[in-house]
Length: 70
Image 1: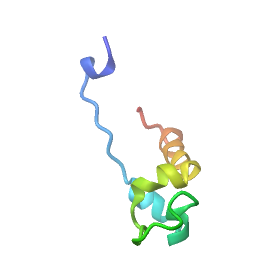
Image 2: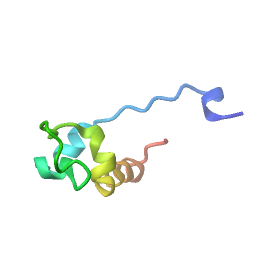
Image 3: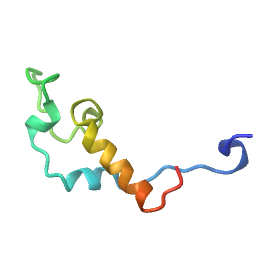
Image 4: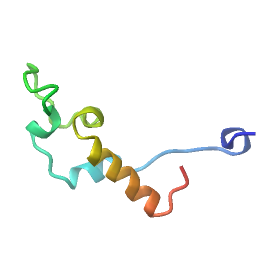
């Protein structure tokens, strides 16, 4: 039996707030992959999984280190 079958699972956290602590700039959101994209990307946190995966990993690790049961 999986955890999802045994109990209610909720993943909710202040991911955006944690990312804001890094004070990322437009160029951080763009990375090399989206350097020439025609629109502003700052604030599109979903892109950070592609352009700044180490930062996203660090935020998730911080939740685990704090005792989150994911």
